Image 1 (cartoon, rainbow, N blue to C red):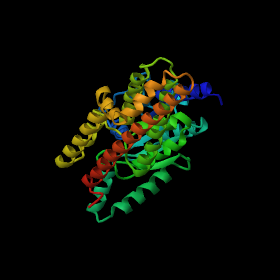
Image 2: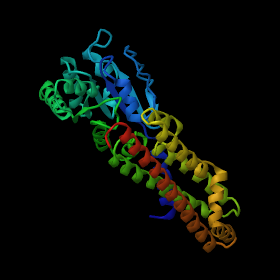
Image 3: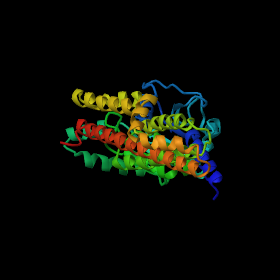
Length: 365
């Protein structure tokens, strides 16, 4: 493939990743915990939590980057009869449907599942508020494991043979426990191409596997921006390329921060589950990260560490052909080097946050 074609493909891939949208319907009766589930998936308070049915307009999803959540009412209400439900909400256009209950699925839910399966839309059955069921069971001397197993069996029987993509038990108060991670991983594997990339980049970190997948996406982001920096090195105008490289690095830094949940909104969501000492420690680490990578001035300080390479890159622009090739190589190397540091530092903070959340939830001693 010719260099120009390679560059066009990289630019197209980056643009497609940034513009990709994933439509996910969250369907269930009021009070089943739909909004809390949306927030737990996003790792951010994007949906207002309440017990009153607040049916949204289909055009107004809760959105975080490329993820679009549509909080929809239960099937077969007076306003939304089941015969028109799928057409009314255009469910055939969705990438996945999460059917939510806090007790059991009803006849209308089963009808909806059957119709969605016919449309080949992935359906995920979620039983929320599982912590309450576990607590009630423990009061009767039933272990958490036994309670969960009984509920799995009950829901499977309740589904009456309908083969959904999976059954999941979740808790809004304990998002790192139970089956939320498995739900997210299964939705991830049900998607294709850039939707898979976009999904894993935007969801909350609830397992080591999700963290590992996030690194793969972050490395792709760095590679794409590094390739653009290399192409920028072919720019024959001396003195222009460094400022463009910095602009690329700023964009790259913002993408990586979003992937690892280092933005203010996601950290505010996590802090509510942390003790004060852990919350302060994580906040300090994030401040250090943004101070190092968060803007043009900070990145220029980093680039001074490779000042000789920058000088060589700028000077080489005056040498036709060969000089441009050298500049391109240096641009790729600088961007790649800083990008890898960004990933390593962001991943370290994400791991520390994840471990602190596990301790706070009682999962670890």
